[in-house]
Image (cartoon, rainbow, N blue to C red; front, top):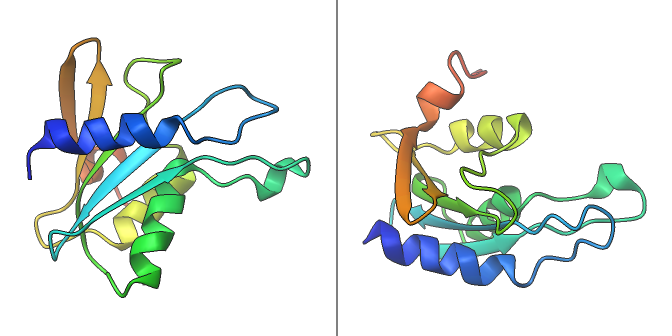
Length: 127
């Protein structure tokens, strides 16, 4: 799967964000170990602790469809270049990484920047 395609889908997903409080839209697109694609956007709630990040929204869709391994995730916000995942999303991604880890794809201007989840969350929690 071309990472530009994943980023395009993340950009499209960000347009569906429900963000009446932060005004900070985020879209995510994951590629699973079975080469399936799932997207998600962030959505907020008046009880802010109930807000869901785009990354976990996409991962939840994949899990609901029986997927358990993620190869890559593209994350995008029109409000910020290099829109990194929050700590909670980094831990959730770590839990579902494929044998080769997860490529975390960010957009910086017109270029894609790729990190490994292990570099973004060294020593991620495991049982």
